[in-house]
Length: 83
Image (cartoon, rainbow, N blue to C red):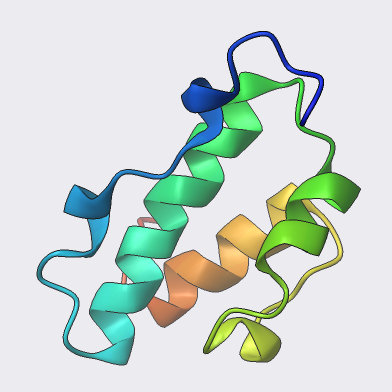
């Protein structure tokens, strides 16, 4: 992203992480970040994966696609959706 005209739009705000004090809150905060990056559409999953794969707790996640990662994060974050 070094050639990006506005690289600041890819920065992750600190406010996502202010009240993260357990794994479930980490997964909820990370889910928000993943959805924001996915919605940008210009960030290929392989680039996103390269950026985040060394973060704590990320090694426990499904990193094959945005869809798989989001589903895994929703489960780990404790979201309960209707069938």
